[in-house]
Amino acid sequence: MKKTGKSVRRGCRKCVRGAAKRGVVNELEMATTINLIKSEPLSSQKRWVVVYPAYIDKKLSTKQGRRISKLLAVENPTSVEIHDVLAANGMNPLLERNKMYPRCGDREPETQGRVRVQIKNDDGSAKNAQFSSRDSIYKSIAEMIPKLKTRQPGYVAPSNSGNPSGSGAAAKKNKKKK
Image (cartoon, rainbow, N blue to C red; front, side, top):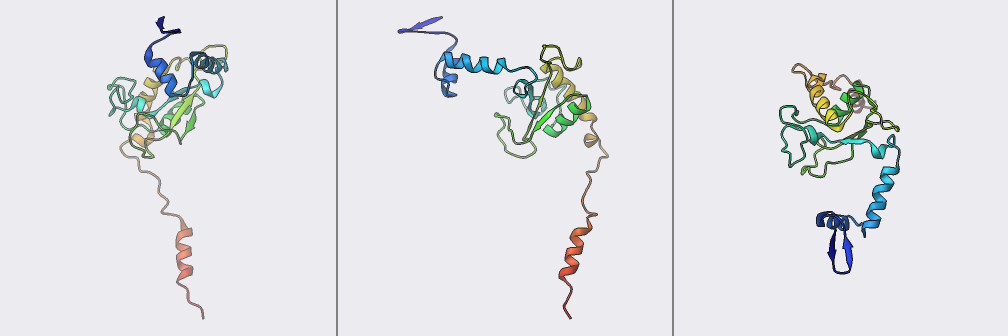
């Protein structure tokens, strides 16, 4: 504990300043906010683990947000790919497309999105033995993304060129009245 003037301040200065920037007035309010989140059951979506594509992106440095080694990481992962991998492994992921990773500078649609996933039941036991921690989730996602069909060399994205509705409208416009 540090004594500064009349009040007693606990914790490091960075934490206290950061709390003030976020709008938390004092330590009591900050502790109350943390306790409210922790009082939620583990099955609540607020308590689920958040996975941003930046966590497993090979092109990013650890300062930019990568959380696994470059040997395991994947180039340009998307939130949809992360969602597909988790859903295929029996998890119940929640895709949030309109969210952005705070450290990401560009606002392109490919980099947007995040995935929430539940790893623990209300009693504290692991929901899936394969995904018992955050690191195991990150590593298994990075391992499975290159195996997706969309990442295979011969994959061609389906196109909408066979849609007859567009050509029918053009034919009606060119007809002349008699």
